[in-house]
Image (cartoon, rainbow, N blue to C red; front, side):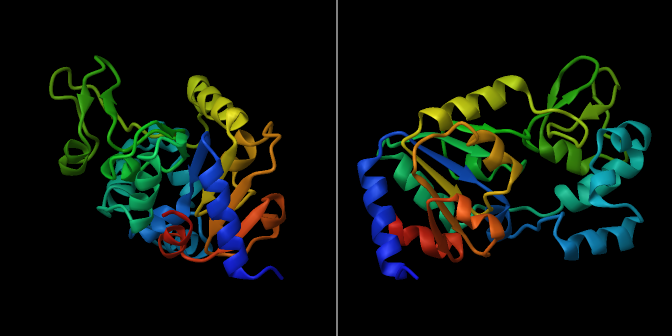
Length: 246
């Protein structure tokens, strides 16, 4: 097995020699920032025990439409309840971005961690919790307005329900966002995948047409799909990323 020091040095050289880097940030970044993966086995079990529904059901567009009060009870507790702050890994991504080497950052997390960290050129495929709007007049509302509302949040102008700014299950990613992400990956000379695995839908869809052999995966857990990355480094991303970014 390749020595970890050799792997780190390979990644350092790749970063040094690359000028069109795409960074893909997965759910591991949410976990390192103090959040949870609602679709982990442990969280799925907890949610089913508490709400008698799976996360897939609770976060579906059908449930939002048909059971709005119960949806927002879940949404405020489980999604908006934790107030996350960016893990150290975001600081190192920002440091790399300041060199001008990063073309695009792609995430499907709806927490605004990248924005909090001051990152630019972020494609949030699943939207963010910050962008909420009235379904009738289009007026925008802050995440705190949603948090502090009673029951279903209502527009203070026209009294219509407010729509969370995230992608719900059963909806499709906006085509312009997907195109932007895929094009960035096709043009990249290095793709850094952080805190997820190669079987993640975001990774599979966005790298499907990537022809270069420079996909670097840095993530905590081993996964059968590791073989689809060109270089793999296992470890907590916030502790491992500083080893490859000066």
